[in-house]
Amino acid sequence: MISTVTTKGQVTIPKAIRDLLNIRPNDKVDFMWEGDKVFLVPVKTLKDLRGSVAPCANGDFKKERAIAKSVVGKRVIKEMK
Image (cartoon, rainbow, N blue to C red; front, side, top):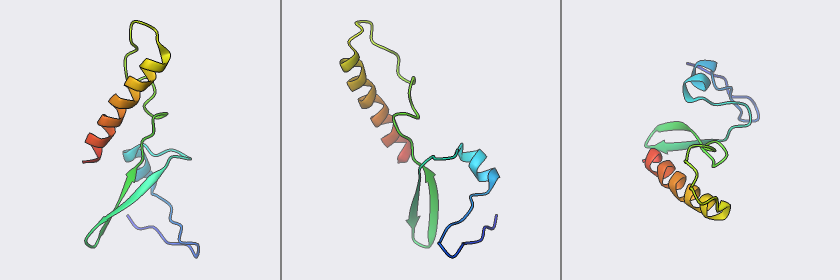
């Protein structure tokens, strides 16, 4: 798919690519490169992953949040490899 670069260096991500990567308005993306190739990677945040970790039984919000950050952080690192 071809897209044109504007004078400000902006490009439109084709709809098929946005749909494939589930990129929505205001999402963050990262540009990564290897050799002569550039990759567009959606950036996941804790907000995007809200509800993906089951709550603890004791109801301690601070403890649950720390556990969730740890679990989600490990998952995101694994997905980025």
